[in-house]
Structures are given as structure tokens and as C-alpha cells.
Length: 94
Image (cartoon, rainbow, N blue to C red; front, side, top):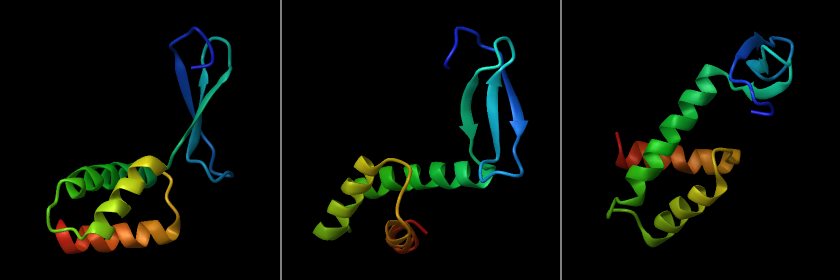
């Protein structure tokens, strides 16, 4: 938070690319952008898949290095990275 209060208010922002924003109810400071529920769910799924794939012994050396690089990239991946991750999920986790 950008303030000392713990009273966030959610405001939908349909006119923007973000699902909504949180501001402080007391001082009205901006706290954070709230991602769309489907984006948050996808990020959670990808994080869990990366953890599982990291320990999968069936991955090739390149695939293992790729999964390691995603760990360092954080939740925002390029479209190409997402396509490769989706293929690995389909191949090894489904």
C-alpha cells in the first residue's frame, strides 16, 4: 500500500484495460491495479504448472532451461513463451 491505512476500495474500470483499481478509503490514494479474474486465474495456473514442470524428469535439457527462465521472468510472459508453456502443460501435465 502507498499509505498507512488498510481499507481498500475496489472500483471497476471498464473503460480501461484493467479490471479495476483499488484506492484507500481513508486517504483516497491509489493502491494497485486489479487484474481481470481470468488473468489472475491464468497466472495462478501458470505458476503452479511451472512448479510441477520444474521437477518433471521427462523434460529435455532445453525444456528444463526454458522453465527455469520463466521463473526469472515473473508472471508476464511473451506470447511465444506462453505458447511454449501451454504446449508443455498439454504434453506433461494433462
